[in-house]
Image 1 (tube, rainbow, N blue to C red):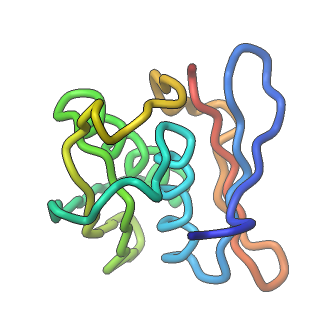
Image 2 (image 1 turned 60 degrees about the horizontal axis):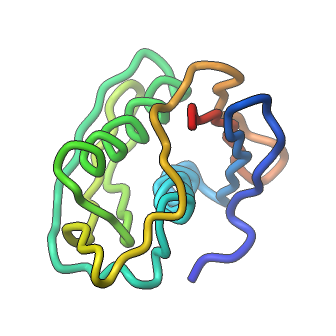
Amino acid sequence: MRDNVYRIFDHVSDLGLEIYGSTLPELFENAGFALFDLISDVGNVRAKISHPICVKGESLDLLLRDWLGELLYLFSVEGLLFSTFNVEKIDGNFFQATVKGEKYDPRYHVIKREIKSVTYHKLSVRKEGKRWVATVVFDI
C-alpha cells in the first residue's frame, strides 16, 4: 500500500488533490493510485487484467489530465478498477503505461465516491526541490 503519496484539499463542490513522487514516472503512478484509492478500496482490486495506455499532450499538465481521464473513462465505461500502475515512458508530449486490475464486481468491491471528470482547474505538474508535485481537481 502506498502511504503519503497524496493529500486531499478543500475545493468548493469538487475534490482537489496534491500528489507527490520522487520521480516523474512515480508521480504519474501515484496519481493513478490516488484516483482509484478515492473511487474504491485499491487493496481489494486484484491485478487480473493488464491494459496498456498511451496518451499525448502538449505539456506535462495535459499529459497528467489525459492519463487520469483515460483511467476514469476505463472505469466509467468499461467498469475496470485498477490497483497497479507502471509508467513505461514519459517523453515530451508522449506517455505510455500499463495498468493492472479487474472488472468491478459489487460482491467484492465497494465504490466510495463517484468522480465525474478530471478538470483543468488548478491543474499543474511541477518540480519542488527534489520531488515532483501535481495538483488536480476532480468534478464529483
